[in-house]
Amino acid sequence: MTLASVVLLALLLALAGDGVVGALDGPAGSAVRHGEGGARWALGFAAGMVLLHAILLLEDLAGLPWSRVGILAPLCAVAVLGVRDDRPLWRVLPLPAPRAGDVLALAALGPFAATSVLGWTIAPDYVYHWGVKAQKYFLAQGIDWAFLAEGWHWFVHPDYPNLVPGLYATTGILRGIYRTTAALAWSPVLAAAILLVARSLLGRLGAVGRMRSGAMIALGAFLGFTGIAFRRSGDADWMIALAVILGAWLLAGKRPERDDTAVGFVAALAAASKMEGMPLACLLVMLHLCRRARASGLPSPAGWARLALPGMAVLLPWAWGVRRHDLFLPSNADALHWDALGAVVAEMGRAVIHPEWSGFGALVLLLVLALPFTRAARWPGMLLLLQLGFYLVAYLITPLDAVELVRTSFPRLLAHLAPAALALGLGAVLRWPSGAEVPGAESPTGSRPV
Image 1 (tube, one colour):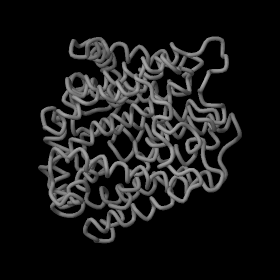
Image 2 (cartoon, one colour):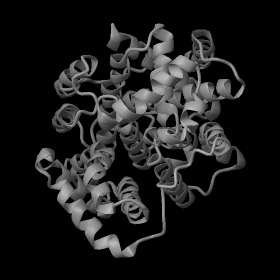
Image 3 (spheres, one colour):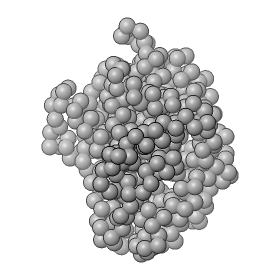
Image 4 (tube, one colour):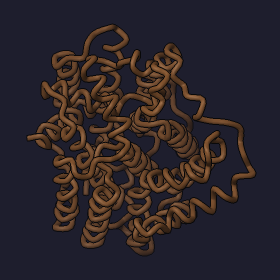
């Protein structure tokens, strides 16, 4: 029942998120809403998490305790907007033409889902960070600012955004009791959403039929393997990985002028998840605007509003709360230490060839460095490369021991980029030759589902 309750809440978030995206898009709609079902479900889920976070923040600002009615009522009201759409989400199958490879890819996540709900692969970050805050928020029925403001609570990163612990606390509030295993169950759900986007991304790049089935099996096995081997149940890195691959899917599209709202929500998801997601949000918006300017010009005032509104709804309350309670940690940043560049790069190289990565770390790094120079994945590849560049800069400005920080964190940061890098790499390799029409793939307008 634990996993089932989380899946039901995820479906509600997807319906509500699709409704709010459709409401902001207006009658014209977006390329996403007329594209492949898998990506649309994942985008709705991402937008739903952003919407839930905005609801929790507004209720906290208003001094209202988090409750079942206060959470479910607005989500259900917004979900009705999606049901009234001319092409509602519930009529769009996540896998319009499922093949054996798609089923096997999802099945590969089964062992990870089982170990998550059993609590066998709990992430260290959940133990000392996300889980601590989530339980405090559940008990306080809101963000426990007094707890975060305690000076000796630096280890829970009090200045981090609160989407992840808020989502875990919400699960407990709706169930009536906080269970760690229910919070851990979100990790395989997020992994499944990543697979849905990967399927759509492979289709956009031209990998269809058996080629895409084989790529999906490989990606499903990779996500299941890393989830168990690296004990990733309950960490926030799945959200960043989902934002990265959704951003890659959007940047691989043909009509950027129709994706302002979608880009806004994906950027908001990244920014509200972790500190590392904030530069990712900026990079995604920047690349989207560059593509949009080349294709049809910069957005109209309404387009700018759709692009900025989701991020403002979650970042402004967060910034106000953090500033009000003086939660920014002095260990976040220092001056740029160029003298550490050689040691940091060398340690990053050693981290990706560590035996526990089984060679995948080196492969992901090579793909991130090479994809911007391919025609099929140029813009998505640039997103991954620039995010990797931010990680390098972050190590150069840390006041802590940079080499030790690379050793303990870089494999985890590389996991943000791995699903998108592998999907883009497989899609570029399996791309239909000579630019011919790809049977069953999306049309340039994104109007025909696979």
